Figure 1 (cartoon, rainbow, N blue to C red):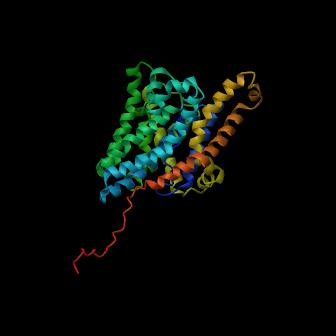
Figure 2 (cartoon, rainbow, N blue to C red):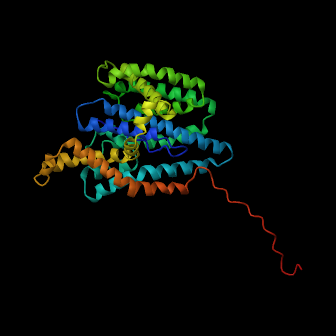
Figure 3 (cartoon, rainbow, N blue to C red):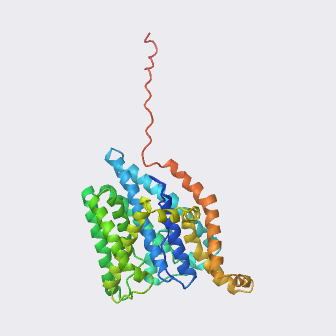
Length: 372
C-alpha cells in the first residue's frame, strides 16, 4: 500500500485564510484516494505526498516568520515557542490519539503492538526497520510532520535572516544527497519514510514563502518551477523510468520545486481558471476535512477487506470498494471535523502568538491610616 503523508494541519487561517490552499488539499487527498483505492494512477499518491509536504513548509514558515517579528520586537522566545507548540498539538494530536485510543479499547492487535511508537511520533523509524502494517502505515508521515514541527521553529526563529535562504538550499541539497547515499548505506531502496528523505519538499515550501519577500528567489521559483514541471510530468504518468538513485533523487527534487511553483500560483490567486477550480465550495470543504479523510480512509479499507471477507460482513463486498471507502471516509471526516476537531481547534484562542498585554490602570495611592 503506498505510504502517504497527511494534509498539512497548519491551515490557512493563521495569518490570512486562502481558500485556494484548501482546494489544493482537496486535490492532494483525491490523488491519495485514487492511488489507494484503484489502479488507475499509481504515481498520483506520491505527488499528493509531496504537495502536502510543500504546503506544510509554506504555511508553517509563514506562521513562524510572523512569530519571529514578535520576538524581534521584544516578546519572549519561550512564550512564542510555547504558543506554537500548543497550537500544533491542538490541531494534530486529538484525531490521531483518538484513533489509537479506540483501536486499543477494541483490542486491535496491530495498533496495540505499535501504539507507543505512534504516540511518540516515531512510527517512521520502526516502519523503516520492520516494514509497514495494514491500518497505520500512513502514520509514518504524521511522524515526519511532527518531527518537522519540533525543529523548524528553532531554525526559523534563531537563524539570522540573511542565512535562512542559503540554509534552505543546503538542506535541499542534503536531502537529495541522502536519497542517493541511503541505498548503499542501508543495502536497499532509500528509506523514504525517514525525515531526511522528504526534507527537500518541506524546504521548497519554505523557500516559496521566503520568495514572497525576495525578488531574486521569486524569479528562481517563477523560472525554475515550469522547467521542473516539464521534467516531472512524464514521471507523474509513469512515462519516465528511473534507472539509478541519482536520477530518482533529481526527479524528486524537481517535483518539489514544481509543486512549490504550483502552490505559489494558487496562493497568489491571479490565475482565474485555477482560482475557480480550487476555490469551488466543494473543493474548499473537502480540503478543510482532508486531514480526517487521510487518517480514517485506511481504517475503512481494512474494514472492507477484513470484515467483508467474513460471513457477517459479506454484504460489504456487494458494494463498490472505492466508493464505499471514499464516501465512508468523507462522512467520518465531516462528523469528526464538526463535532471533534473544530471545537478542540477553537481552543487556540487561548494561545495567541502575540502576548495579550493587560492595560496598566493608574490608581490613586491609598492613604495610610492616620495620615490625615
